[in-house]
Image (cartoon, rainbow, N blue to C red; front, side, top):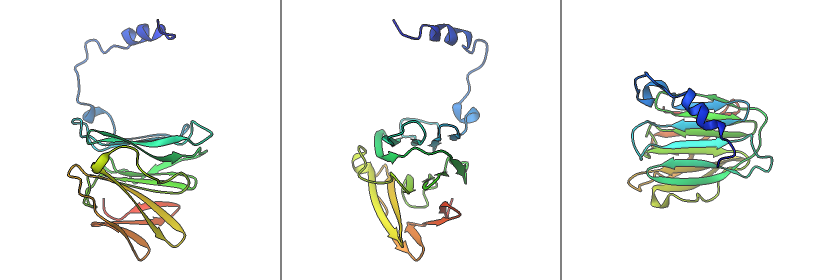
Length: 192
């Protein structure tokens, strides 16, 4: 017996009786942001088990032990920790599901444009960022680039296991054809 027996009644009341099914790609956005709990979701597509989904929750746990979760290419990856935040915003949302999440001193960019040469490029700077990715095998690779006093932690996902090298290029990080900079309090992607 569930401690929530009313869920069955709610499911029945809200069941879409008489409504034609629809492709989720036609009705749901690829980027979601909860500005109260500082939760963000980035999704590249609605197709199959190789879809890539990046989720982070910066508002639930005071101890900051919530990991950034990356589901994609048949893998589940945990990376870094999301420290508690009291404000957040999402900017630069693109039709492919790319965008930038900023919460106080934390900035996270998710790029599905493949300009970097990877299926997904995730760049994170600020508290809690980085470390080894837990999961992903050869489909995931972490890198770190330091420019001045800013550290960019980078995670690439590649179905082929081929990962572009990230390197400092003046004031930006170069990853394939993608350029990552920091301006106006957050990460900015050059190519989307």
